[in-house]
Image (tube, rainbow, N blue to C red; front, side):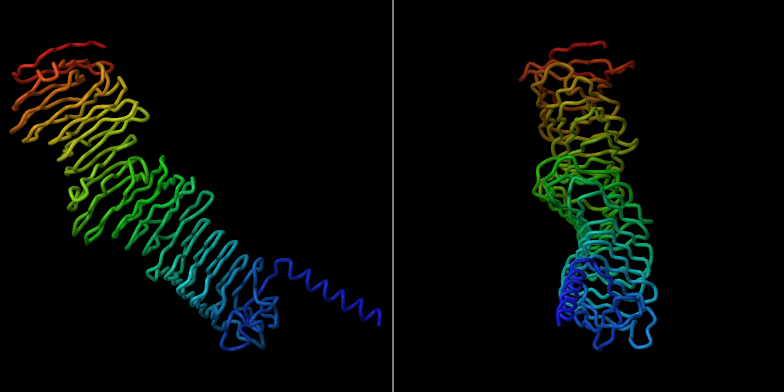
Length: 470
């Protein structure tokens, strides 16, 4: 009797001990319909006997189609309960279908989809480790597929199912392999980098969303967005070397209620083939800005585009308000032949040099100068061409917020100068009324930084004039 009790206690201890440690569970589909919650459908070995515990947190799950003389290892699996496991591996030997239904799936480790079919349902799927899609016909959930590790789309097929894929990682992530098309794609700012290394462009057909309270960096690769963009990330210092391509065939909107430098975009290309692209009240860009085609709505929200970083602006087009922010001795290059028209106002801000190189900025509104660096200027042409009154506002001393080449060719109104204005390149006057008396203006013609010469063309009357050599 004592031996029997001892054996019984030992069996209980062994059973409890096993339940506390990770176990491997293999799908054998012994009972139809093949519900996840039925213990008869789970084995402790590939192709083994069913009757093991249903996989739980810490368990590794395998769908491998392992050979079994008794059970339907390749049978379909219906997820009829909420799932929380350590990992899921679907290998090439499995050829049936896994259906999510309305139950959540949480994987604390990696999920590898290398065979069969996965049909997403209507509940969230969270994968903490790496996500690999190599051979499965994968239909995502209509809710949120949250990926906290890197994602490799190397084979199989991915169908977005009108759901959202969210990249939300406490560490760097990489999206690699082929180029998936997402319905809604969200990047959560966590202070880390997401690298787009997949072949070709990653498509976003409904919404690209940049969220979170820490900064994000999106590097390399291209996000081809044919839908809208939502900006709610409240951190400064965002951006990266990736490209956001707006290429919709219908109207698109960029929505944001954020101040300057929050939810900053990396490189931007606008190549819209239909409809209009509507801008928010404030948009900050930290990469290259390229306009190829499309109708821009920059008036509905009285938009301001702030360029912050060394970048190139390419393509003749019209914006509303524009701002150049100097924060690290930036050079802003307006590509040769490009005319960037600002129908609204323009400003130079920040504390580091702003060099405006090549190209033309056609300004129809006012110019505000608050940049306090002394090394500005450049070879670009800033043309005052407004048909109404225009004002240059500045309370700065000589050499701060220095301007590049200036052209004045106004068809109406008056251009009013501040008390002091520094110009570091050519000055061309063609037409227009000049007010240099209201503020007792002094125009300082300072030589370009380094070496070089500049010319003054056109007959006009100024107030005070200073020539400064460097």
